[in-house]
Length: 188
Image 1 (tube, rainbow, N blue to C red):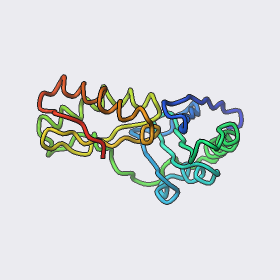
Image 2 (image 1 turned 90 degrees about the horizontal axis):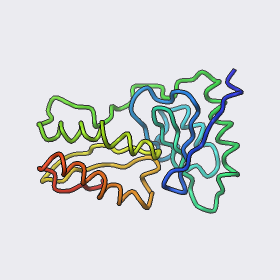
Image 3 (image 1 turned 45 degrees about the horizontal axis):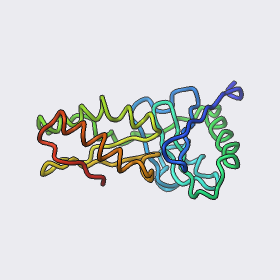
């Protein structure tokens, strides 16, 4: 029975985001970001979590769920019991986490990528995304033009004060180090 499920929490660099680890697989591959109830139509789990007062966004990773609350006045200790209950109920319901074909992650290589774009995606997937996911977020590739890599930050990274620093220093430096064509990184 799922009732004895032990859910761990982990802080993220964003005080308004908390990472919940249910101790089991959440998504088979990739990550999904839901900015509000109406975006969560394809995920019964996210919909259940949005019913909890104060939940602003839900981000699903391979083995974690990052929840961002609406404002600093809401206390995690008040919200946590409801979140734990929702996650437990969901996993005992047997429902799928996402219930239809979800859009593929943009870092997936595609035929029309040139060599530089393939290298950018490869680096994002192998070096950058695992680190960002460690913090309860994700980064998606949104394009490359005129030397600028366009990225979208998700999960705990969206409204996090350190996200701009992450983007500029970490990601930009790494991409520039390996790929001379990259002149900068921009958040979309």
